[in-house]
Length: 115
Length: 112
Picture (tube, each protein chain N blue to C red):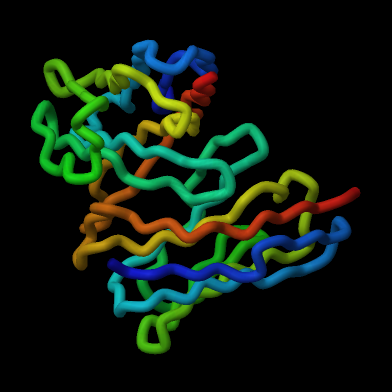
């Protein structure tokens, strides 16, 4: 079974440029998350999708970040314009419920460097 | 929100040694997960452990929810155990991992 696939693996851009990350969740997983992980920290939730609906985007900096999940499958996360402080690893996760519990599967992440 | 403290922040072991990692959390929880992030950044779920003890090979985890802590035991450590170990209770109750709150993790290095 294929895991959560993210691309690109690495991205280096100059500040004020736009950037986009792509995520393909595990087939059949309705719930999708985007997390941001700063160096030396644990991941922090940015947005959660249930199918194509963003059920919680309260921690997404909406002035420059946007996300979409077309047809409730693949998702993209965009930053425009990028700032130096956006340098981080952006992780996508999908999940399913088993026995009343939700199990998350993470992708390998996109490491963003803003110069 | 819930506060998560993990200790120790760093741990260096010789291959074959045992270790215990601790996670303290500020609120009562009814589920908690442990993750391992390998040196290449991949996060893998190790345990879903709201209470009690679970074992998976050389790893086991115990959560004492009433005292707000969880422990991860690694026995006979191997170099492949290296990486960062995170505990993550969710913000809400129930079986959902909605808004998992990750600690800062314990960086484990196992030397051959």
